[in-house]
Image 1 (spheres, rainbow, N blue to C red):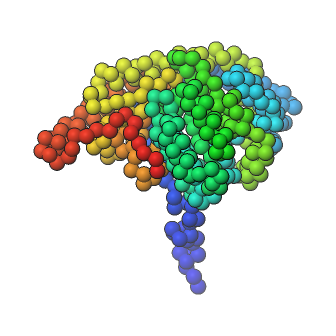
Image 2: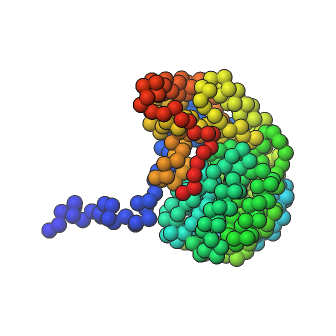
Image 3: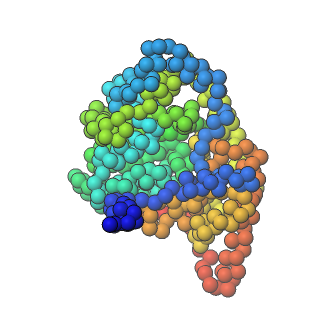
Length: 435
């Protein structure tokens, strides 16, 4: 008679799908528990400040859905896989605001932009395919891609965004018509984690290259409306209708309401539709109905301006604190919008191993190597810090604490340098290589 132990399902490594072995846990998610400690100031998670959301407006939108018999019946029922027509019309209106014209059959609703990334990966990637991204790039995009075992090639950025000269070299090396090259993924506005924005000239060149090489371009734009200085820049989608555009309400309304979208050619959405049917059937009908009413019946533009005002002051506080407290060996980006600053330290500093000391000092950040493909060896001397969630006073204090941790590390390394144990080389602000 077999024992209960023998009857248990074997969850050992050899029973797990091979693609799962390539996955790694998100460092940001892993830091959430530490970040909830009352003595810790978190500069790690890219969270919007939901206390800024007008709760009365959210309640009024929910009431509008629940108090109408017809609306309630739809909101509490299954919906179509590609999304509710009312919410699609809202997306078309939001896209017009930024210079992109689309019709509802070119809009596909998702459970946040993260699901859009997962669906695109599942629809288009096979093992060994090539994906090109900025380097560093959004770490959870890497997680979405990695499940399908592509080769991820990273292209460095500078203050004007992804370097087009290095992208062109990479595309030439891959070759035109190479079936392995599936898409280029970019966050052109206030990039995560870099905070940089792609210049107009580079946007035009990027469009020229994707047209020349006939490669799909994925434009991820979660932060585009959160601009604190400078002028509006035209979306890549407005420059070429074939661009696959990803949007979300997570940064302009509430991430807990999982509503995102893809705007793309109809034939692309038809394939994604097949994949989503087997993933979750449909997005939350209630979330879509609530968000539709919020953007239709409330002064959401005024609320957005409030976000911009608050986040802009927090960005200014972070940049001022970095200037005041950080050592001269450190460099950092100066974002015109979004949530993030990318800090680079001398190349001999490992921000991953330094994180424990930072936690002990009461501050968190995300080590830079998290934003590169696993095993690349890149980003170890960098970190992403976030200014959207904490108050200006907490941000200043967090930077002060972090500067002390960094100074202790640098002082230790100075001893080694003086002893000749390591060379005093330091990496420029964003010196990376393609993989």
